Length: 134
Image (cartoon, rainbow, N blue to C red):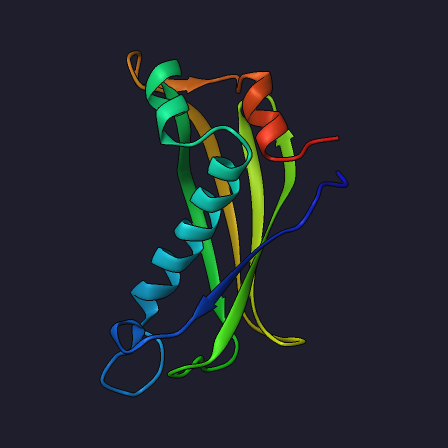
């Protein structure tokens, strides 16, 4: 699948650090989620649409690789790309870059959750468009 790569720049602040002076492992999850929300919101499927349609993406699995330390006041870019979507299950890849250097990779499996029925459903066309499917 050939989809667009979305970028989300972040300046690492004091609140992002742990006592070792580098970015806290839980902060990686938070920033990766911020990047995904930015992507869908800017493409017309943000929280108001999720509430109105009664369905939204839910993470089923995430695998993170911490490759390089990220430290205070460094600027990173988070790249997000939809890798595949078959039936009710999709895969996303995210990378945290410091310039050309990859500091972290994350592979996510997700589905579209119907908020009333509490089960996975097929995603609406608007959501697939928000993820920049060709």
